Structures are given as structure tokens and as C-alpha cells.
Image 1 (tube, one colour):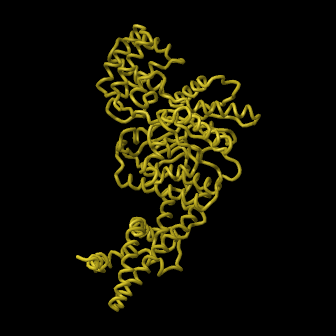
Image 2: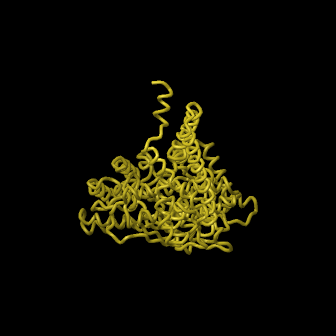
Length: 550
């Protein structure tokens, strides 16, 4: 078989090829035929949306491999026309070029339409997420789509409810997971488009609004409810603000902008910044090809100026100083709030006595060695950054308050805990804002002292110790006499101050397989009644850590 036979086999137009090309180029052809038509009425969107979905499915395939195949076919058919004087070959060559140009024109239409959508979302970040993505899809429909003057439907980002009222435990289907991934990819591409076409201010306001849409979209797709508790503690912007969150699930990231959207603002509400500068893991978002290149999340985070952190101390002291310098630049020079997950990774998900999902742990985070260690559940990077910011403000004589907002995440571990691929619907997720910590250089002599205050504030916001003690005393009833329960309650008082070792052990026990709860609880009760030393309890914590169900 010579090259001419191969070219004939590759580029010869067959009946099924013609029908396939018609299907792939259906929307661009309709756009050209009805170029002067434009409509954005709500009922018309239901007609425009199906072909918009089809266009979004086929355009990646059409824009690259099909266009390349048509370009090669156009050249081959043109050569055949010259060599054999076949006018039909010339016609096929011209038609192939016309299809390539139609596809290119559709790409330009999509780009210009998405720029209009970015302008729209900057003004209306509280648009209903379904309406936002309906507009995005309709831009790829068979007729040009017009945006309304204002959204048809809006939501309160700090108080959402997409639940269907069914029993907790119903799983989200694969289709919704696919839609969630697709939505995230589209939002990341819009961020990159905002960077390419607009200045720094345009990117900031567009990315801020898109981050709110991302949070509401995730809540919609998991069919969950979301509430910000303690909104009265969310002071107006104007300081060097650091938001610290407990970490339960991958969903946590999407909820942070919804918290900032609940802050009271003055002036232009649409220009408010709902997007903090995250400190995010470099190995996940920059080194991971899937997240960085394919999904575009890492590139979008890079465009928005997020700070990438080497986890596990791989960057050394020099890397830690570089991260601190970048964080201070965002916080003090750019005036952008910081969002930090000081646990460094997601906590282990807990289960109840019937195997039902509960919220994630607090002390049980990271590797087994970290769980086994004493007081390693919270990293000190946030305290270092806050203390350095306070020192800079004090030395510069600035009037900027350095404020820490501790926020406890709850419910997200019930929806999708660490290590699980199953997402549960009808979950109420909450962000509880704790007591605000104002950091002053002169009042906080050591980073350790500030770190302890942060730890206490996060535990208080999440009511960690109260919940652990409630479970502990309930489980003791079948193990010891009532008199001994009173003695344990008295002994527990000594662990409610600065030393949280017993609570850390309890947290790890409930992260173990259920069959080990009673033996470990019995051992802990025995240790407390016999006033075992702290070293003995640390040894027990090590044994419990080895049994934790990672």
C-alpha cells in the first residue's frame, strides 16, 4: 500500500463521515445561518441549552483532532483536484476549509461571550449557580444568547439549602460528580481568561465573584445546606485578616469564599473581595498534572496569586521563610486576607456506633507518626505569620489591626470524608466563626503563646472537647460503676486546661475501628482512675495511633 492509497483511506468522504461532520459542526452552521438572531428570554434558554450542552461536549474534539483532519483533507482533495481535474475534489477542499473557519468563528464567539459573562458575574456574584451555568451553556447554543439586565434568581451565599429532604446517606451519582468536575474546569478557565483579557483589578473582582459561584455550585451539586454561624464576629475589612479553618474534606476550599461573602462591606458591594489568598499544597496544585494542567485548578490558583507550600517540611527553613514572606506580601502590601488550614491536611473521618458518618477528627490528622506525637495536630506556620505581621505593623507605626478569625468546619466530613470517594447528599454543612484574636506585637512575646490561643479558639469554635466528653461518658456507662464514672469526671477536670492529652487520645480512639473502642476506653478509664503519669498516657496514645483506621 503506497502513500496515495493511505491518503485515500484516511481522507475519502464516506456517507457516515458526512453525517458525523454535520453533527459535530451543527451549532457553528446554525450560528452562521442565524447570525443576526439573538435572544435571552428565560423560556428560550430551555430551547438553546440542549444544543449548548452538545456543543460543549464536541468542541474539544472538533477544535483539535477534527480540525487537523480537515486541514489535511483539504490539502489532499485540493491536490486531487489539480491532478485529476476533479471539481468535486475542489468543492470538498473548499467545504473543509469552510468548516474549519466555522469552528474557529465559534471559538471566537465563545470567548467574547464569556468575557461578557465575566462582566456580568462581577456585578452579581450571588446569582443562582444553576442560572450561571445555564448562561454559560447557552452561549454555545445554536442562537446567540443575550444576558438579562440582572439575574432571574439569586441566593444568599451564607445561607443555602439545596436539600431534597430525603434520608441522610443517599449517595451522589457519577453524573453529578462529572458535572462538578466540569464546572470546576470551566470556572478555572474563566479565571485564566480574566487574567489574559483584563488587568489586575478585573482579575481580582472576577475571580472573587467566580469563587462564590464555585461554592454555591458545589453545595447545589451535593444537594446540601450551608450556614455561616457567628456572622456577627465577621468584622468589616480593613485589617490584616487571617482566617484559620479546620480541615475535614476537599469541599472545605469551596466554602471559604461563602464565608467572606457574609462580611459587612461599605461602598460598592459588587467590588468586595470574597476570595482570600490561600496557602495551598504545592504537591497537589502545582506538581500534580491533573489538577494543574488538565483541570487548570493549579494554573488558576497561580493566576490569582495563591501561595504554594511544600508539605512535610520538604522546603526546609528557607522554604518556610519564603512562604512567610509571600503571605506577608499578600496580607500587608496587597491588603488581601489569608486563608490557612493550620492542620495541614484533612483530619480522619469519624463514625458513630451504627457506622454512620460523623464529622472529622481534630487531633487525628496527618500520618501515624504525627498522630503519635504530642501536640503535632496543629502546625505553627499561621502563628509565625500572624506574629510577623504584628511586628511589621508595630515597627512601621501603621494603624492596621492584625486579626485572626478561627473557623470550625462541620458537616463536610459527613458529605465526603478523607479517603472516601462516596459523596453523601442532604448534609447540613456549617462554618462556625469563633472569638476573634487581635494580635499585638507587644502583648504576644512568643509564637508558642499565640499558637496555643489559636488552638484553643479552633477547639472552642468546633466544640471539640464537649463532643468528645459526651461520647466518652456515654460509652463508659456499660463499662464501669456509677461511682467510678463520678471519679473519672473529677479526674477529667485536670485535663480541661492547657493539657489536652486525654482528649487527643479520645479523638484517636474514635478514629479506630469500632471493635477497639471498648478495650481502649477501658484502658483509658483505668489509667485515669489510677492517676497514671503523662508518659504512660503518651505510650497509650502511640498504641492507639497505630490502630487508627487511616
